[in-house]
Length: 365
Image (cartoon, one colour):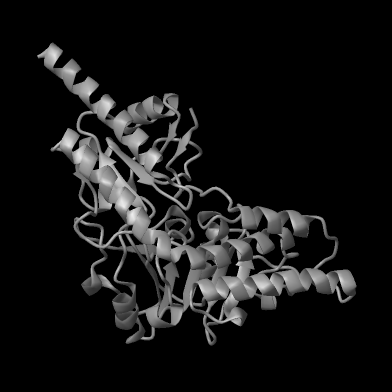
């Protein structure tokens, strides 16, 4: 039986077009900074990709700075500007929360939505567009409007949102926006920071003058080419999000029938179409993951940035979720190649685990 992959928020399988672009670029020699024919050919690939990535988020191509991934983009966004104070929502990704030692946390409510009243009026504010664990979408445009009224630099981590919802950086009103290729079906190890004109950044990685002097280092031409191909396809694929909403809602409705006391986080507010964070009553996440893995079903608990560890979720903690509930939560995340059969198999497996647990509880009682 084929495996079922429902961990797209950790990384989504590469799209065939991205694989082809990486393969084609890998077969070409040439440094994108060289002025000879092969260098110009490499530069053309980079610039074509820059156009595609910019189009995905409603930006201009000369705003795009390629990086080695979303983590580097977030670090550059938080460490590059010359600001005296930095604040970030309490549910940010670790690559934001650990980028500096002086980050103040902005509170969120029980659904994980940032408190607009708590946005500071100085320095830099970082708020993710959509949460990687719950899929909750933040009121980014309103948050940016509040911050910009006090000349605050606004950064948005859009790594999980890109390709899963329409993004217009200009409409959002943010100054800096982070992306990662492998979340949209591109290769791992390449990302981008989109930088509005007028935002001054001190390069965190120093060396040559690549990427307009903001990010030194020879461009990863093959990775960038794959990023561009994935961005083009992800933009065209946005219409499929309604299909993912249907699949996600089908999944949640089925497990609610099997377990009326199940808890689904963030389902009362706007969420990404592909994400469901589910707490199975009485069964820890690590126990669930082992059973699902044996059944050939791949899901996760929280962020996939803890060296394979099943760690306590700071996101659910910030939402006020009790530890004994949080430790039962798993994340199911759908993607561009998810099918109805995948959902049916997950629901069947989830229901079997839950019913077996309830049977054991009754026997003990």
